[in-house]
Length: 240
Image (cartoon, rainbow, N blue to C red; front, side, top):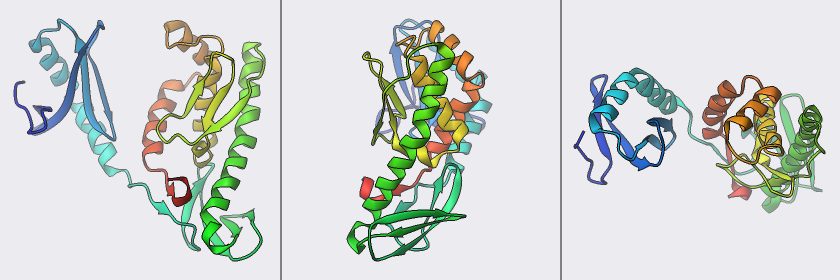
């Protein structure tokens, strides 16, 4: 357990290969492993013995290696510049851009988006249209979930965040990443339900997860799918 990389990360041999991971001790009662686009991270209680940490990692080695391989297979985010022939997902289905020079407008047709704009502003016009679609789609879902909790429908706004899908404020409003427009509605629904649940429990206590389960029973699977789906979403040049 004392092997380290030149950058100070720890190494452990799992399933016949050396795995690099970030390690931290915190005031907590259990050991937690996370695997994402940044690699493997392990958080352990302040006084957890190394033998217990190592045993836990060995116990989870097959899962860890499988998750690392799953992340490695994901396509890298494509850079969309706003040119004809480029593709991006819209509500979980791929659409191809058909771009022309002219008055600013976007029209959705089966399997494609027809974008008209002055040449330097195509990506900006596209992002503006996507934001409108996101707000139009997500606002009714927030109202739907709020009604199930018998609370007032929240004011819904959009953010440009790439890594934080949503946030709920103490004032009872929620902000959602407009990039949810790329995802299939079931995954976007999970994010909306998560933030609406915060209207009742502004924390991540057991009570919060219980409220979320009422709104979205399959939240665990959705959270995992969301992490994977989000890692390969396109990067639109105007949104950098």
